[in-house]
Length: 271
Ligand code: DGL
Image (cartoon, rainbow, N blue to C red; front, side, top):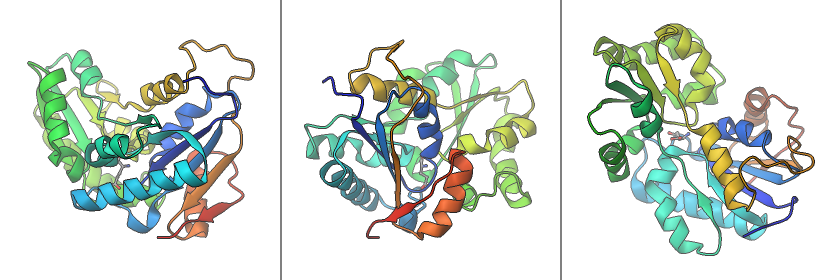
């Protein structure tokens, strides 16, 4: 499916985490419009049951497609992908969906010690999809997982390197580092915002892996844009509309900081 430069890309996450993918997408666009929903009234997803995550993902996708005209939907959330992307593809068969999975494959290729650590939400790690991903892509590699309870809330609060954020990270990182992990997967879209803090804690010899860039490129491919795109105006996005089910003013502050551009207005959707 080839679509014009003003196509709308719909993106959602439980909160502001998906902006880490939006940042990567930004540089690849040539005028496409972006609509981003932060489901802040329900963040975090990572401790919620399967049916709840699937229901919210369906509601948000319907909104993006039917009210905002999204030509493609980017599920900028590992947790929602695990629990909902198959259902979304069945429910909206005419719209391509891009999902996110922890970068186990690139991490397995990068490790020298043969030990890879994965930071993600409880719901991502508990899904059968994660077990199958490890089985398919990390043969012979020791994959150590850690559910980082409370970390998403820290990013939502804009606390990227304070004492509480560091304490949660310390608790999550220590067990994998002490068992020899030299490569750590940031398996939740909120975590790339913590990359400088994490890198400083683990040191320069540990490789951090996230899939935001690869997922952004895949989104463009699904829009019919070839790899190595040289369209006129690459690097300029069209209008960006931010929406939230939470408090627009609160969300706007943190969005602006993470997106790095002025966000004049955040719209409100029903919680
Ligand atoms: N950012 C999401 C993810 O990639 C969800 C985090 C959460 O709400 O628990 O998993």
